[in-house]
Image (tube, rainbow, N blue to C red; front, side):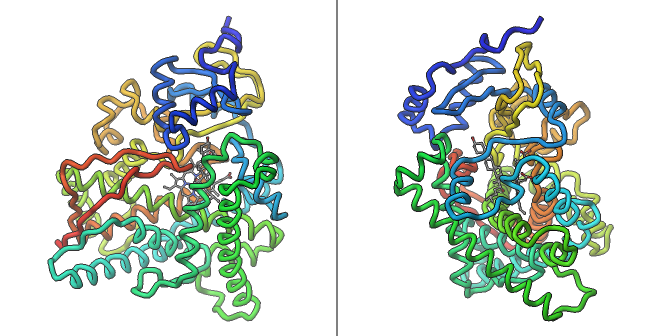
Length: 469
Ligand code: HEM
Ligand code: 2DC
């Protein structure tokens, strides 16, 4: 018979002491490494209590499969307390990110049709490809300006602007012009606000929301300010699309974006549309931009792989004769490169689900309503799952053999990332345009580590060089 729950290894009897130790070790920026170490110490499953929050942590793809197979139709993940607290504080409705139960499912099914279903992908490709082309134009201008046949920079802000421009083009059907020399200060403020929102979330992860507000600490005040800026800016974009639609300013033939489709369908109340569109706008900045930055860094360090990829892209382009949609069907190595980037550099340190029934993981009984976390970062670097995990090797995804529950960068099942298709197409098209035009280089011996800032990001600036081919 499976072993009982209270025999699970781990420090789960002393929540507040644990939280203190965690804080002392700089845990708020280091969760990913502490988790990896915990798996080494306790094995493939451990139970943990940090402050008021208890979880069971797993690392193996088989256990992840067991967990997701049992998740049912209304999966729930950990709800980030300060995000809930902000909405309650300002009396704002939840979007899909924070909704639960049937209310979540109804919104999510409507949103899936506009953002995730295969038939909308064809409409996204030209919109996202255009933004990729503009990035290339901008990079060429920077090369000219340098007078040195190359552009060397920390690309963080460039990629933030590229990502916001991309997600807004599919959401609103409009260009913001963030890849021009003059950048609208309001858009720039939005970008800062999203980073600040993530940054101020991590210290408040394990504190109950009610306590946060009572403390009125600086972190909480900054957090409120960040969300205020996010909602204000998103609201302006949403209002503008709404107005255009009512005034019939656009011809009904052209695709005018996810938001106007949602408004025209009239299936969701306006407030719910606004809440979820705001979440998508905010969720579309740091996620894809950081992943692209890591991808460029890894490709710069692996010139051989970069060449192979360029060859694949050029061959696919010739074969498809410029048809980007067709081209995307024959770029296996590029897709594998993105998976490999997310293996070593996942955006989310864990995936989480609350169990709804008893499940057995590593021969332990896990009762219903337990928070179970899949240690995504730790799994990506576990030699038992990925041989020679430190090697950036996209080919491993193309080799024969089982990839069973290994590529989980966007989560799994009905609660997986809503922006997945947008993100994948955006990243594929960016890398296609980039590699068709530039060689990516970096200084050889520079090691870059990972920092937890709610999402995982580089722990120091990355310098990259683009050299026209
Ligand atoms: C949820 C990763 C980009 C919007 C998630 C989750 C992950 C994730 C791991 C949780 C999934 C789960 O619990 O199974 C990523 C990665 C991205 C990315 C790796 C890019 C590299 C985006 C973009 C958007 C977005 C571009 C917006 C367009 C969302 C939303 C949710 C979510 C709204 C919550 C969905 C729900 O609860 O129903 N993402 N994401 N993400 N993501 Fe993304
Ligand atoms: C953070 O312990 C660490 O995609 C916590 O686009 C568990 C946890 C719960 C939810 C995760 C979060 C972590 C990381 C950031 C994620 C989030 C769910 C969605 C969000 C993964 C792992 C993200 C970045 C969304 C954000 C949308 C938001 C800006 C409106």
